[in-house]
Length: 211
Ligand SMILES: [Zn+2]
Image (tube, rainbow, N blue to C red; front, side):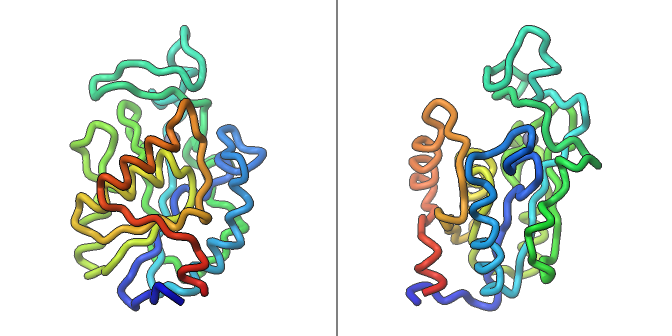
């Protein structure tokens, strides 16, 4: 075992929700393949938090709110360029629920993000306007958490932004690559790994933890 998980380390399980899994409205290819691995990895951690994408039905990241636009096109919002998505993770719907196959009963917190109509939030720390805080950094600081390990969906959006913002918040952040899957829209995956490297985010495989 090359990486020994410490009692104060935290596993962050990003957006393992029905809409991002096969059959969902914004399914990430192979998203279901990482569920057993995430369950196994979680057994190594005392501390686990989940994130949950959580949008009102008229969220401005939905292409359906922009009559002349299609999913995966972009639009300019006050805070910058926003990718438009199919409707997904509408609060209190089946699609927004965490997968019932995620079996981590000792998980400690579900952090919801993206619940303001006007602002998307890929990151679990800071919304897309790069000003509005989710409160996760405060929670982690109060818990006196050590290193962050990040898994889930999707590598190039919510995992990547969460990892970069975690590093900016002062944490030692590692993404466990084979416990993520990507959307890879127009080169977004390669860009995300480059941006994560620039932010000193570590990139490992699960075998480095599980042995
Ligand atoms: Zn979303």
